[in-house]
Amino acid sequence: MRPGKRHGLGANLIPTLLLGGCVAFGQAGPDDARLRLPIEEGVDLQFVPVPFGEGSSHATVTQIVEDRIGFLWFGTKDGLRRYDGHRFREFRPEPGNRDSLTGLTVESVFQDRSGELWVASDLSVDRYDPATERFAHFPSEPGMLEGPIHHINQDSAGMIWLATAYGLTGIEPASGRKAHYLDAMTAVLRSTFEEKDGTFWVADKEAVNIFDRASGTLIQRYTLRSAASSTGSTSSSVSTAAIGTRTAIRRRSGQSWAGTSVTSI
Image 1 (tube, helix red, strand yellow):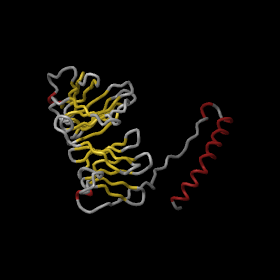
Image 2 (cartoon, rainbow, N blue to C red):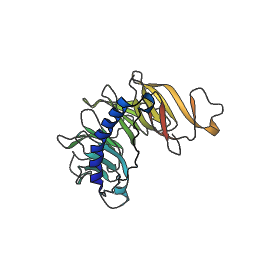
Image 3 (cartoon, rainbow, N blue to C red):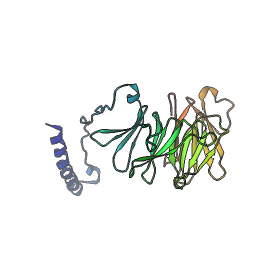
Image 4 (cartoon, rainbow, N blue to C red):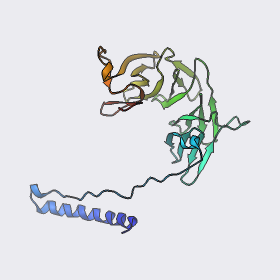
């Protein structure tokens, strides 16, 4: 039987089985009112390679983002790619075109709530307007915005946050005004995320931190230590199997997860 036929049969069987279950429930006692359905392993899920270039720079995909239209965006070591389901469109720096992508090595891609795409490439960040297909530029600026930019995020107030190798930079999308924080940090910043209650977390190479946006300071730090080095640690230390935080999130259940660069979360 062909896969397409099997799906159609399954769709017809489900209402029948549910109806049969209702009938059985009405006729049987409490102990026999359970409908048992067979569990079948899916065999029709396939991963198909979709090549978009030759060479190692094309093969290195740094991030994948789906926009609100349904386009897939791929950050690579050779520019930005957009896939519409049929073909790729390439975005690279174009000499003489001030509206083109600034850098070639794309580290991070993020779509904000307005639908615009933020692209971190080389040492700067660009904002792509899908309506005009132009990139607005936020170039590297010592003491304010210094790459590489590892992660882009937007908080509930609409501020764009860039986690960089030299601190945290906030950008107000409407005005383009920038503010720099944590320039005294010795650890490389990896990512940021905001909880529903407004708590704002910043992950660096060795810890996850609570960042107070009003004062621009860290108010709590949870250092990630290996089990071997956890002796003598403070109450804010977390014993983990490896040091090297790459990203962190907090689940709705209240659990915090930190991804490391070695072998654990």
